[in-house]
Length: 435
Image (spheres, rainbow, N blue to C red):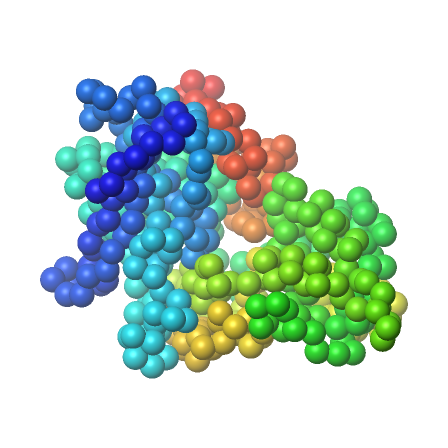
């Protein structure tokens, strides 16, 4: 362990060995990284009496957020908790899983088998091993953002004895929807986010048409070696699901072109910013496992987002331009072409195909156990969340005994970041029956 300080905080880095396959506890082991955070005023004697809160980041594929000091919700949490910022297996400083490390496993088949152990079920089993090591067996509070909320729901289904309280922000999953059903619900939401964006920034419609037409005429390379196809450009719509995303997208589009001797070209500055938004180099598991998080023995996901997109011709850029319409942005969807355009994903194309074809994914949620739940649970549900379907979330909320919801349109999907202490205060009060 390494302990050090930031303004107002004392941090201790932990590394936890866990089985790759929890069904084989004596088999291969990987490492999970966690950063313990306490307020400076709690760092001395008595620190061990503070209850624990473990934070599960959204994703899949993202390590826990790196805070500098008591920022956002963390400042509120350390007033009464020892906080563990957990890098879920394969992310952050945990044993990495990416194009550079996965060939150590062997070929695509071996890589796919390895990555089958990186879903919510394995993450929760990691949490239980870590909890017993840190708390001496006492239950802890879980704060799950987005995919972290999916993990928390699985936790309630399989190991509620490890939980004191569960707080979920933008992450109540459907208990039984297939990947097809998830994306069939998603595309209308994405269309609404487009409509809201172009109503706010009508000048962006012409800019989007110009960029899409430019990309249909030529091959454009990004600074990191990726390809900016028209479909990749459309996927910048992932920004539209966050609180400031519509403004970020507008600012990105307004500086797209520069004049050159050969005519207008996409500027280096624009391409550099696009690269930062589109690259999966820092979180490849988001793409590789994205549809697998919805799979529960209902057959293969088989690139559900790509197949369901064909049911929504308004997202076809070529057809839109031919009709003089504005191509719509997409978001929260992963497609086969991602594994062609992005250098961080290209070596994983066959692995991703095998995962998309996999049919033996085990169930993630236990409706009967959730209906008998006794753990205090509070969930922030965002009124028109682009990433997680509100109707699915509310259906699940009704299925979990005692779960209390805060349904709000004050925040988008990243409300726990934007709202910070206020969001955490509200959820704690709900869970404790104070409001």
